[in-house]
Amino acid sequence: MARNFTIPGFYRSSSITTIKRFRDNTDPKRRDFNPTTIDFGPLRFKIARHFGFCFGVENAIEIAYRALAEQPDKRIFLLSEMIHNPQVNADLVQRGVKFLMATDGTRLIPFSDLNRDDIVIVPAFGTTLELQKELEAVGINPYQYDSTCPFVEKVWRRSADLGKQGYSVIVHGKRTHEETRATFSHSKNTAPTLVIRDMDDAQFVIAFIKAQVSEDDFRSRFALSMSEGYNPREHLKRVGVVNQTTMLATETQAIANAIKQAMLEIYGAEKLKDHFADTRDTLCYATHENQTATRSLIESGADLGLVVGGYNSSNTSHLVELCEEKFPTFYVKDADEIVSPDLIRHFDMHTKSIRETSNWLPLVSSSQTALTIALTSGASCPDATVESVIKKVASFFPEACDPEKVLADLAN
Image (cartoon, rainbow, N blue to C red):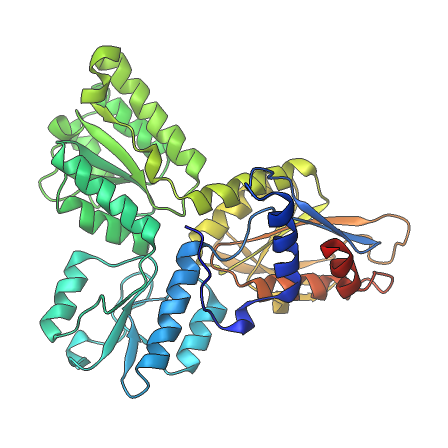
């Protein structure tokens, strides 16, 4: 899906564009996942091969700003956050856009306050059929400016196909996440649907399929995660697995493989296709590329990691999880969180809170050894934010080479 989107220039970065263009020119088929090394002398950044805005995010931003340009005299609302990035959402609010709901679905503005002349933008995550009908009842076409990611819609279409073929759908995702709520709504319209969070949930499902746990225990565990009328004894005989596109693609595939193996053991190879549908084609290529690039970044080695993105961004959090396994990693939303060489504010995913860490940046005063930082960002993070992080950290190294010269040399 190669396409150039029209998005505000302040989200772009000439430096990051130089890096990405350099990599695309030297690796046009995008098969080299090794990181790009930017050497400033005492400081060295290793930057993931793929990072930042994905197709779906750029599509959503283009649509939102087009709505503002085309409808200057109308009230414009976002159903919920456009994407999970604070800079983007804050800029839209500053321009007069209002949010109808919080990310958890809590109503911030009653739909009864809307009228048919209002514009409501559907976010990149899509929306539920129930919310769509509510807006249509007010006289609003929720898809006049529809920024639903095409890869999310692909999951919806695959789920519908599974239902038509007599399969039930298992969604690997976070039950309360906007995208999973939307996928669940569309899927349950055509197929019995179950949402599972992780491999532990998958193993519990497998245990039920193998008659190792009771139906009461199954219903207790998944009480809030099943479509109405879900009958696990019947609906787990023929299944297909799809995912929330921002989850770890490798985890989704591992879950699918585990369920496939269980079906193989129970029904045998000849009847496997009657009980398990291959849905690998629904995995988002951008999520897969970013995660694969992050693994290569980790394998290349670093003293510490910086992951940049919104703190409620699911895809960014999974990049942090990967990096944390190898070296100290700091999850920051922007350069302002990097206060000084002695202090950084960052999001702790384990406690779901903002932490402050002292002495996070080693070797600041050393001119003998280069500090290597692994750097990547989530799919909803502007390149300009990544550039500001690089420059902020580089400013702590008086002997560092001029960033503009280093990047110019790279381009040549």
